[in-house]
Length: 296
Image 1 (cartoon, one colour):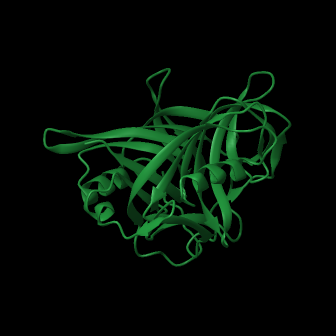
Image 2: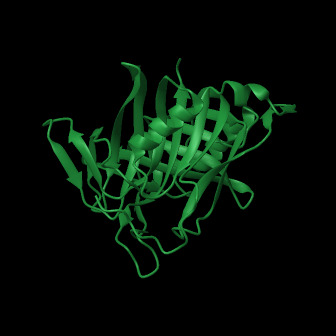
């Protein structure tokens, strides 16, 4: 896998992380309403404007999406033309929730079953609506805000976490517990960093010796993984592959940290892949939104 050459100046810090506290709620979404509005509504009830969600089951009744595409004259990667389906059965989705220009915003990668049974996936646009209601595990983060803006390095829209005071209902404070013993860390991993190394770096920085990776999404410059069916190592061509879901665990083994990461991916041809990532072989393409939850 070759690193991508982006058009803008290289950002100094390659992993931007913030320790947070979290609170979650499971909800059944309503039909005919944009996904972004419903998920942010659940966040608001938790007293937050940033967090993440994990989606499963139900249908999208208006599905608008794209897949990654090749480089352009201005950027190292791009999006395909917008694609759509009037209905599709949701299998799984990851969502980062935050603000862009002060308005509710989301970044979501999902996979679904199209009419006829084919498995598809991609990057959802904001106009996507639900049909038969999916279930959502919505997790609010306290102590950080996800803000979307155009990244000067990649010239792509990206979410970045920034530290903020804690807001939980009517109570607002700077909770020292977040800094002393966070239950979760949210982070943006920048281009050309290996995702396995990034997870380990975050765990070492915050003293996590047992942790779960939750609802991770972003893009790799291709991908290298162990195929679950054959056991063989497979590679996907770049310049970008969308990560629909990154999950995994970190634990101490013989006084060192070991990590196993599994991922579902959609390549620039629209083909779905799944498997265990090969450490050191999955570089971030444009950005990666990483959530690491303490278990120890």
